Length: 265
Picture (cartoon, rainbow, N blue to C red):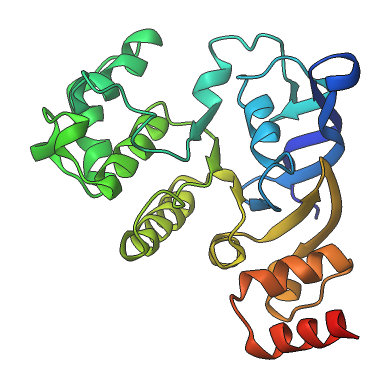
């Protein structure tokens, strides 16, 4: 039996600028994410990955094509109920939190906006779920480490109990020692809550850790889709995908030497 689609994107197009300065940031992107799945969008910086996420979470209404989430077409602008179903964790935990809001205010504000009661219990519960605990409740962002700020950002996204979590490079601004902790936390939360996730990253190791399937983007288009098993075995279908995989493995002395020989011929 085919698992139901939670996210369905068909011929999504997003452009910026006009005339000679027109840029097609996303050019006819289509993909489907099954319920409970984690789907990766990978590619070099500027390929349109994060722009896709901003459309999916309602932050960029200037798109064409079709987007549906949980079987409902995405409205422009989305209604309030949409933001209880779909939440996003941003790349920069330093810039995504209000510097003058305590943890309690940051977590209480979404509950107040949506008229959700029992706030004390919900705030303490979500803090414990992300590994912070009630001792952090009245601290300010500047009193938290980078990893603790990202845990708070995850808690803020989860406190409305969404069905879809969009992750925009959630570990790239963190120290390497903290990245694995955040990835493991996100994996555990996805399983416990039955979340459907889209993870945007340029780091294929991060994608392999979290995702079931992924799409490779180049210049605003998806050039191939593959599952994590194919990624692990290096079975890519395009030259760009192969190059991205090779680059993700870091510096390779033999490849560098072969490149030098080729350029000197």
